[in-house]
Image (cartoon, rainbow, N blue to C red; front, side):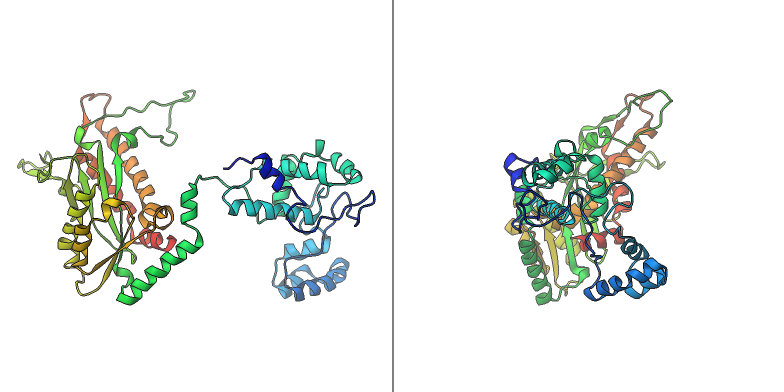
Amino acid sequence: MVRRTRAGAAAARLGRSGRPAAPQTAGGESGAAPAIASAERSWGLSPENEILLESWLPRLRAGEMAVLHAARSLGCSQRLVASARDGTRGFARRGRPPVLTEWEERAIEEQILCCHARGAPLLERDVCASVQEYINNDLSEVRKAAVHKVFKDGLPGRDWMRSYLGRHLNVSKVASKSLEAVRAAATNPENLARMMALLKLVREKKGITAANVFNADESGFSTKDLLSGSRKRPLAPSGTSTAKVVVPCVSDDAQFLTLLPIIAADGDQLPPTFIVKESPNNPKRRRSAERGDGAWQFLNDVAPPNSIFLYKTPAGMDENTWTKWCILLATRVFSTLRPSEAKILIIDGCRAHLGYEALAALARVNVEVFVLPANTTHATQQLDVTLFQPLKREAKDLLSKATREMNVINHKSAKLGIFGVVACVGKAYEKVFTPTLIRAAFQTT
């Protein structure tokens, strides 16, 4: 939320918005606006229906016409017709009438919506301070005195703001979310329109269907952060203010891993890739305690089917790892997946993703790479916008459950290893990455 400056407040003063000044009431002023506003007869209908409703008001008030019949004839709600009949349209039914005129309240609404569109939304106190400045500086002495009887020192209170929001349904209180200026500029309608036009052009030129439109991105999982992060309020004995959560030790190779999923616009998905900490070409394995023959168990056995594993220290993404992944994807997946059909892979513009060898490997199997514009992934990257957040939330719950089953209190030497972490992340992946949610990710972006 952006805090208002003195200059910003002055610019937002009512009566300074570029339209003709509001008529005032006394002391040699033009117009005759009263101290307390009176309703204009405007009900949000078409001009023809406005005239028709206006002509029916005497019959409605005399009880000669039913509200239901008028509402059905006009194609509107019964409440609107009843409000027009009672003369309360746009105003609270109880309490004193609004202090400001309808024109002045519309000016406030326009200013609120304008500031929101510019990325500097107003707080309640900003609006009340602006109204106070308008009352104390722009109203006549006669009207100012009348308003001061309602607003102390001309400053509206919370009750006025609540009533105002009830009268103006285009404005409501919402939660704020910070957005960097560079991201806001990058996702303006013109830039997004150019991106979508280019994507459409590529798809039409190569005849790419929704089943061949893919999105890929990597996401890191810090096991300790997931285990020690804030949780929902747990159950505890009455009178207890907090609940201590014991976090187990995490083995060195399980502290961090990277997941790289691939989704398609038709709701399908390709095998995900896990990047875990280890020397290359040295796959993780352990003796299986569940099988009596003592056979080796590999990470693929606890991950989703056909998952790809890459080993790197640290377990993150760089250009060499991305290139290796693209070559594996081209040879293992895309070379046999509808090889005669053109495909498109949507990725972000990270420098690690733009190596020539990686792009060439994908091009050889008829995969066109579409790079999203810089600073737009918060709005255009399907995995970022819709899927990664519920994936991490589900992984966090599964890791917490695994911790409880370890009984850390009685087994202080117990450790959460890489097999347990991969199993939890894999189960979370299988639960979250459903065809419905994948399609919703593409529809949202």
